[in-house]
Amino acid sequence: MSIFLKDLKSIKPYTPGKPIEEVQRELGLKQVYKLASNEIPFIPTYLSKEILKELKSINRYPEASCFYLKRALAKQLKVNEDRLVFGNGSDELITLTLRVSIEKGDEVIVAYPTFLIYEIQAKAQGAKVVTAPLKDFRYDLEIMAKKVSKKTKIIFIANPDNPTGTYLTHKELEQFFKRIPKRVLVFLDEAYFDFAPSDYPRSLEFLKNRGNIIIARTFSKAYGLAGVRIGYGITTPQIATALNTVREPFNVNRFAQVCALAALKNKEFLSNVVNFVKKEKNYLYSELEKLNVSFIKSATNFILIDFKQNTTDIYNYFLRKGIIVRELKGWGLNGFFRVTVGRHNENKEFIDCFKVYLRTKFRSRKTRGGRR
Ligand SMILES: Cc1ncc(COP(=O)(O)O)c(C=O)c1O
Image 1 (cartoon, protein in one colour):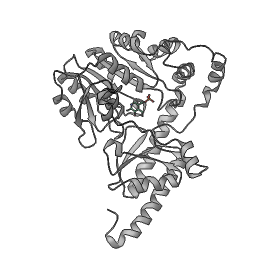
Image 2 (cartoon, protein in one colour):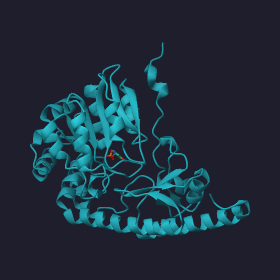
Image 3 (cartoon, protein in one colour):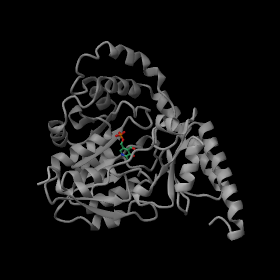
Image 4 (spheres, helix red, strand yellow):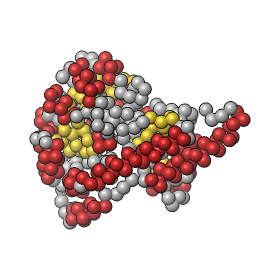
């Protein structure tokens, strides 16, 4: 008898984007630009005071309830504190949600392709994963609603989505909720919420009217805190209590708590990041258009590139030049790769390298009828 779950073999482990240090070591490169994991390229240096202060208490367990952070966030969101749950990244909220809800044979609906953690963790929890294919790189809410069965427990929605970068509007989600039975828990993953445009859903309204929703957000992206791991869920007091019951008591470390609290207060950093990403995304769009490269317009800090051919060669080419992008074969998106908006010099280097790559390829293939 195996000690492992029966379904463990069917789970493909998540492969994160290559770390800078690994590429430096393997290729002997001094300068490496990581445009692979949708992090922002800036270090929130204003946090160093907080971190140094916290070092003095490093021998003590952190505050288990994120007391001060919870208070500040509740005030900012205008919700009661009992509606908030904190996690070791918003990833943990996904795991906790499944843990409090799924019993053998229950169904979970996810888009295909989308953020991979939903499927991995749902399977690990023994759920049957039902997939709803995207339509024109967007969530197809029509299909998703049709997939609901008596066994459906949770629907995961990444909005904006990763890896496509597309988003659902308030109206679209409003219509969707009218079709979904209230007993089904809807997990609205808003990891890229801060980058989204103005017709983006006001999901707190859905939560107020419907209940049975978890809105998950993170400090990893626009706030630049991916390295300390902290995210949160906004939900009903009942769901929050359930998630808090099963989480590890000290799941959010003390550095993460003080950094997030300071980050909440520093509105200027956030708005600078958001404006910067917008400007640089437009730069990338216009340069990609000049190169005649197809891409999907994004509501996030990354762009899905439709390369239309195998990406192994270009991925390795970028790597040798010290640029890490993300191949998407693991998502079933063959012929696509994803690039994160970096600093201007990084984005320019990416475009310059892309240009040289295409020129070289184009020249060598011209005799065979062009690039595509
Ligand atoms: C859609 C989506 N949800 C959640 C996460 C996880 O973020 P966190 O760092 O908060 O765990 C990511 C990270 O890339 C993401 O793309």
